[in-house]
Structures are given as structure tokens and as C-alpha cells.
Image (cartoon, rainbow, N blue to C red):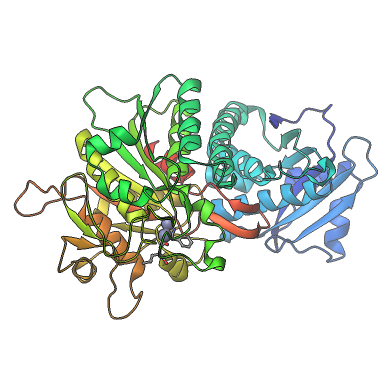
Length: 506
Ligand code: BES
Ligand code: ZN
Ligand code: ZN
């Protein structure tokens, strides 16, 4: 664990990170720092070796005993500062100093950052950015030297006496958030032969042990059969590993308040099943449980932060594997509410397991339901891996989710639901079919998948087919980086969604 604290006169650092704005004169405190180190910062700027363009960086040697090195990092123009750009700069600076094996860091926080984001918020986002950057999934490397050196400490400069309390409270919240985020990332990065449905259930139980307010219940195959979750069971039946339906209840809100139910896709490995994925498409399919891991991390963070809301997490977890016992294209599965589903392609499995979870959610009479799923390749094709897809007909939820994501520097992009997509998943032989297109093979794939989920959010007892609850679906197209990652966060799972949800609940 990294310790975070305000710098004192006695603090010694391997490296002081000084973020600077482009085309600005140095602010008062930076001028003071500069003077302390015999003009080392201004000399580089005067030489025009460093212009503070976004992500530009330069390492300086000060000759000072306590602060041996300074890393200048560019923030770009002052007017284009966002939470996102600030976090990227902090993350990139941390990763580049770790690359040099520095473990005791200091970060100077510019006055403009505190003014724009508020002191507490600035602290929280800075700590999250630093902790997220410092995480590396390298515990499987056998040579210790080849692993990233853990950050020992980060001290903050530029926080005055009046701001101390707000800063410390934000930093403390940031640490709790980052712990949950990195836990989610680690679960998702764990190889799929280890990260089984039972292993994921154990991870949820571990959260329950740490936070007694989180009640965890794991339904086994027999319970799932009793509930009649035929779609979930169908997907799981090709695997040697039994499915688990993981329930986390965190009821810290008012007794009479209906809960927000979070649903997460927990496919611990998606081979495609009998509709087998080609080899190159199967890479990264360990991440197909990121919906469930995001829900787990959100509840962990909510409990750690003591958020006063009622939140329920539902995580159907299983593998999608090809074998003699696998479900087959042309099978017809029966969801727990008795609705029939034609299987056209066994690789469209996420929506099947989610259909039973969305039905199960009705028992809570929820205030709202939000599901998280690495549901479609089509969403990644549409948006790339820096935005996730948002689907909902509830304008208030959309507004709130968009505002919450912006507050923490994450990106959601709304994609459509609509009658053409709902029409596309109708079947001649069953109530719905698990793939559909609008206008051509694969066309509108993210929206037809969302329309499939939407079907199961209906109140089937109401004649007009009203929704049983307000619902939003997030297709996690930006939840992991294949291969090497970005300058501000290493490759693998990135923890997307947890901060957005915590901001949504706060
Ligand atoms: N887990 C995948 C979606 C996915 C693909 C997520 C790539 C992240 C990266 C999902 O189960 C799937 O296989 N979807 C198919 C649906 C198709 C068969 C209609 C897809 O997107 O190709
Ligand atoms: Zn699939
Ligand atoms: Zn999948």
C-alpha cells in the first residue's frame, strides 16, 4: 500500500512531479520552488525544451539533497483542463517515474486544479489517478526485478493550512476508491483457469467479511435450477465448472427506500461455446466477467466510503465453453419468468445470463436497475476503447449517469434503443432470439443486444408491456486495454465504471 500525505519540510523524495500549464507564466508557488532549486525549472522553460504540451515530460536533476529530481509534466492549455486530462497527466507521471524505479514521490498541485475541481474532489481524483497508475499485473513474473516497484509514498505540495482538512478527507476517499478499483482490475486480470465462478463468488464473500454491512449470498446450481433460470443454465452447461449466482446486498439507506440493483455479466471465460470464436477473438475473453467485477468493486467502494444508499448487486457467473454437453444453436431456452429464447449463436451468451438476472431483479421492486456487461464487440467497433456505450429510455438516469461520469473523468456515449432493434430480436419459433440485426449481418449489434436485455426488464403481468423498473445498460467497451495500455494506466482491466457509480450515489 502506498501512503499519501502532505509534504513537510523534512520530507525526502526520489522525484518531485511538477505539472505545468502551456503558455502560462509560473504560478507563485512554482516560482518559489524554482528559486529553491536555483532556477532549475525556469531554465528548462527558457531554453524552450519544455512547453507543457499535454503529456510532454522532462526530468531535471536539482543538485538538492532532499529533492534530487523534478519531473515536469505538461497539462496543456489552462482553459482545456478537465478532470480527465488532470488524471491522465498524474497517471502518466507516476508510471514514468516508476519506470525509473523511484518509489518516494511528491506531486505539486497547481492552484488552478484546486480552484477548478474543489479541494476535496481534486484530492480524491489525484489519489485515484496515482494509485491506479501504480498498479501492475505482474505477480506472475518469476524474476522480482522484472516487476514494477511498488510506490512507497506520495506527498503533496501546494496545499495550504486552510485546505488541509478538505484535502485529507478527499485523499482518504480516493484511497478507498482506488483499493476497490484495483481489486476489480486484479480479479479481471487473473487468468481464467483460476478466476472461475466459484473464485469470483469467494471474492464477493471476502468483501462481505471485510464489510459486515455487505451481505453476500451465493446461489449454487441446485438453487439456480429451482429458480428456473433456464437461460443462465443453458449457457453454463458446456462447462465443467458449476455456475454461481452471486448476490451482494448493501442496505445502508433508509429502511423504506427501494434499492438500486446493479447487474453484472460474469462470464469468467467466453470461448464462444459451440459457435466457437476464432483464436484471435478469444484473446482477452477472461475479461468477460468485468461487468460482475465492476458491480463487486462498486459495492466494495460504497461500503468502504459508508455511502448511505441501498444497493444490491446481482452477478450471474459461469463459463461459456464448447463440449458434448454444451447448449446448441437452435436450442430453445426458458428464462425464469417462462419466456422462451431461441439460440441462434452460442457466442451471444451474455444477454442470456443477464436475462435471468434482470428477471430476478424484479423481486426487489427496485428503484432502478443498471447493468454492466462486456456485451458486444459491436460497441467497441462503434466507440473504441475510451468510451462505454450507454442505453436507456429514462432521460433522468441518462442525465445523471452522464454527469456522474464526467465528474470523475470517465466517458459514456449514448447509443439507441428503439422499435427497429426490438423488432429484430423477435423470433418465429420463440418469444425472442439471441441475435438480430438491422439492415445486414451484425448491423446495429450493440443496440439489438440492448433491445434483448430491454425485453426482460418488462413487467410481463402488465397488459401494455410496461417496464418493471427504470433501467440503464452500460456496454463496457472501455473497461480493459488489450496489450500494453495507455501512458496513464497499464494494460489489462482499468476499473472503468466504479468511480462513475460512486459519484452517481454520492
Ligand atoms: N463477450 C463478447 C463481446 C465482446 C467481444 C466483448 C469482444 C469484448 C470484446 C460477447 O459475448 C460476444 O461474443 N458477442 C458477440 C455477439 C454476436 C455473436 C452477435 C460479438 O460481439 O461478436
Ligand atoms: Zn460471446
Ligand atoms: Zn461474452
